[in-house]
Length: 278
Image (cartoon, rainbow, N blue to C red; front, side, top):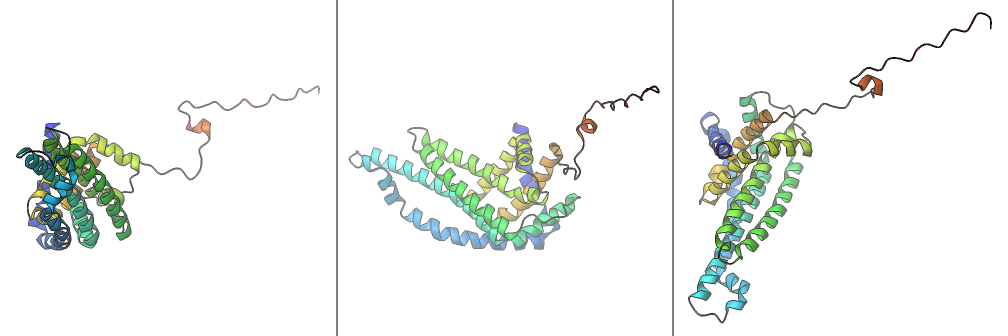
């Protein structure tokens, strides 16, 4: 499992290799990430400024506590609120960046597919598909943020478990979302995708956690996004190679049961010939 987790991290690092082969394309991938970062910063900065007020609102029961216990509790709650906000922000950032930069990331995805050989003929989803996936990603991100907030309120261990749960859950969600373009182009069914993720859980988690941790570095979200798109395409190809997915189209003409049986059925004997005296 550890080896597979490390392989997922290396897959993200492989995505940076596209800076050497397609630098102009990767620079274009920075533009939507910068736009999304500016939009998110406008929402996060007021939250950070008003964090003491938010912490006090969430802990009215501690109003009569003595110091330093009241201050420590509210500082811990503020830390958990920031962790939940960052978990949601990373998901919203990905959804917003992928939606805004769909034409740019489509070109990055196609370039990686061509470099790896055997690119699918179809595109990796339309703009409206990307928009719908982005909205779904935001909704799931809200659920994760609520979960992180609730876990973080657990006494004694919540301050540690909350951020860790946020990184793991958000990273897994990001990995599944980023690999969606390659799977959409191959028209894989939900059951096929479930089989792929089931066969590469640790690798997918390693890729997603590494991506999420890079998002938490100041400015890292902008720098990592083009490489994450490239690396996720490589990850999808690795998953397809590791798990055999066979989806043959249904036959246009139904096959009779006796021809589809593994044991051929002998045809019925011909009717007995009529006796000559009758």
